[in-house]
Image 1 (cartoon, rainbow, N blue to C red):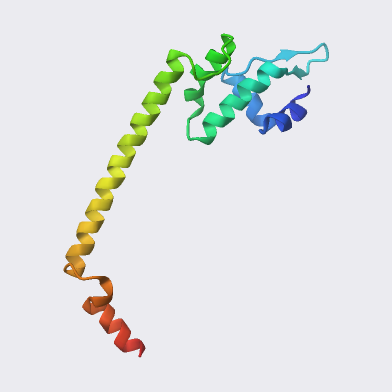
Image 2 (image 1 turned 30 degrees about the vertical axis):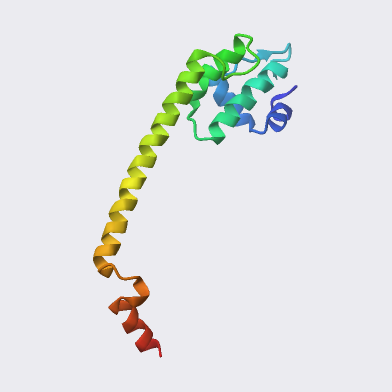
Length: 134
């Protein structure tokens, strides 16, 4: 299968495939005519890479999953290195969620401080807007 046809089948671009090859995630064979040749194994690898990129992994994070598939496993996420990446990504998300919660708590506190604990529609600034628009 030629690169443009394979890219379409895999749901990506020829440029992305060349980049994956350059980064060592995809090893393609060349035909007698010099064109890259792809098979079902390559399709599984690219689909694994694409699915991980879609959930926020960076390209280097996909390497253990690709290696796991290349080792003959039915899934790229059953190897210890892949599981370690999942755990690390979950820990990163937990840290991000904690930071966002802290920011939200600060915003809530600021809002309460500004409105003196009153709902906004009862706050003097809202009453002025209501009077001036009447």
